[in-house]
Image 1: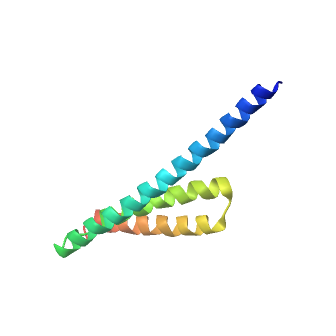
Image 2: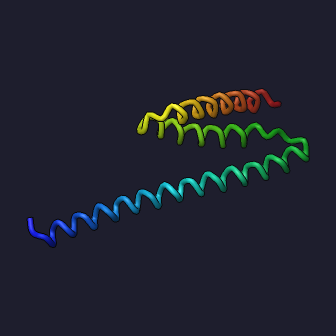
Image 3: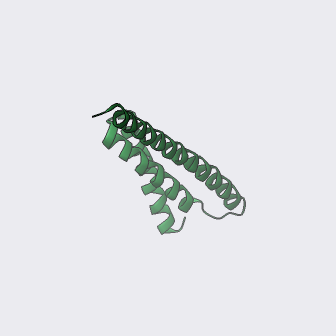
Length: 101
């Protein structure tokens, strides 16, 4: 391999890492906005006496899925713990939603 080929490979790998970092950050911002909007809608629904369990289930299931995937790849027990809590909250909220509370 010549110098140019090695340099080109290194630059390509650097770009791949940068793209992964950008995708990770974009996902973080997406979740932040989702949680804020869901909280706003939940507040408005609660003011009108409408149950908020559907939004709670949606947000918790989404966050739980992300953390479960992260745990599967990185084996961080904190991710697993929070994922389990999120799935439990999502399950309870779904049950309440189906029952009509």
